[in-house]
Length: 262
Image (cartoon, rainbow, N blue to C red; front, side, top):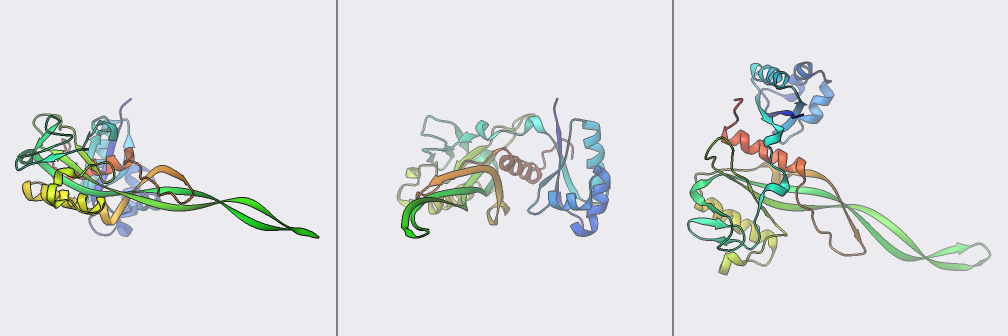
């Protein structure tokens, strides 16, 4: 059975003053509404298998002046469905995902550029030798495993092509640690973060007409994936999961105004 997602992209007034009224629309508490709509927006407020119920909630939100959208969950792409950018080629007319014979996205067909960051939890395990007292006997040296929680952030660029029909073409995804930046040529910098920023600047220059948003950079999206590392090795950030991709997709739908339920 399919599902419909109702998301809130803009709040008319303050969330504190509107939480109770919004909660009444969907049968939740004001506390639940505040938790679900923690910024940055858009955030998913409600999911239901009933299109009629979803449209009723959508209408109720709009009548109170809130910016809301309704999306059929089956149309939201999975992270694995995105065009992944690896050894890209960037010229004056287009971006190629993985060499000159790969998927091509013309700059004129680029509708939205969304920069985002995704934060994952890291569980680091280390083993150290410690002296432990043994009562009357001399202390013994034993190995003890310690665990500590950290976090790792992966930066990304999502590219949304212009819709050419009923269905929107597959979005593109550039991940900071999975892209090769040789395509930048002499502009290539020392770090991946710098190179991703350079690529972003060039894409925005070549597609100045495209909508741009970076609200998910200063407030990274959370992923439920847990990264485990041992010793002092550097953790590798996982790719965005379904939740992160959905939030970016909802933002693109809002920016582009192509939602059929608007």
